[in-house]
Length: 143
Image (tube, helix red, strand yellow):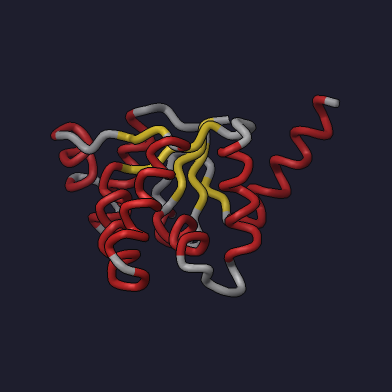
């Protein structure tokens, strides 16, 4: 399953944000175990670097980015993605860019804590908790 991770899900893990870190960390763990094919929008990487640098320092941010780059595929942000985003029905341009970067690399789903931001989505959007439950059901069906 190819899943695009919203920036907020990764921030929950990197900044140990309660009460969200537990479920988000389980999903990232599934990416690390290669049970989920994880994707991050290219702009997510720059945002994460900036926010983790502010919260935990430059060295910690660099380590976090290196780890993410080794685990996740990166969904490109190019002219096509930007044009799709600017002409979309999304109210937030950043969310639209993230969404269309995933659409262009044909992800199966997006995981976010802000479902309402993705009402215009043409592919499934999950909260971390609902994706984890759906994933557990899929694994059970295969066994």
